[in-house]
Length: 193
Image (cartoon, rainbow, N blue to C red; front, side, top):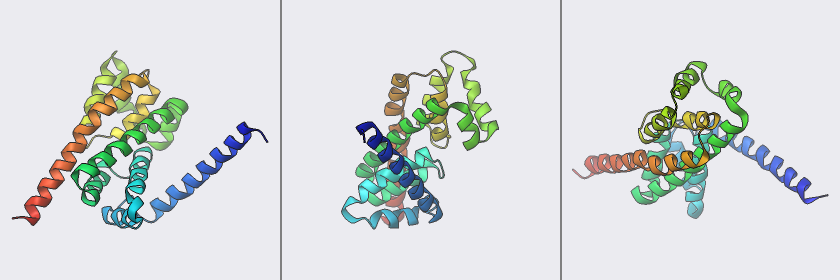
């Protein structure tokens, strides 16, 4: 058996394990409840941050819940600084995976994952040269926009990986800082009056 064959077998096993694990996470409601996510992650004790990092990465690739919910869960579980770092690393990793998947499989996959109206709405940003990158950067920085979907869509455009990386690395923290500071402020106001 060649090394190439062994790597293929390990890759296939890893994909199968990942799919089964993701299906289990979705079926248990971990992606739909911050409380369930916190209980799940804290159950891992000292490696809880690794599990949260994985969950945060997966939630970008499989946009089942808004990233704001899991980001706030990270702040609650690990505090504003560590929560921010874990959120940032996980969301950046997930963004790059979504970009690569979009680039590899194109709009046909997006049509299976997302509403056609949504694809058309944001794909219209490509109509003018240079417009997509600017609007994409604003969407990544602003909370409440479908930034996970846009990472997939960016992969189907002519956007270079370097441009994508700069936008992700510089704009992701803006929203995450907002979530971290906002939640810390809200919790402080709620509990320390």
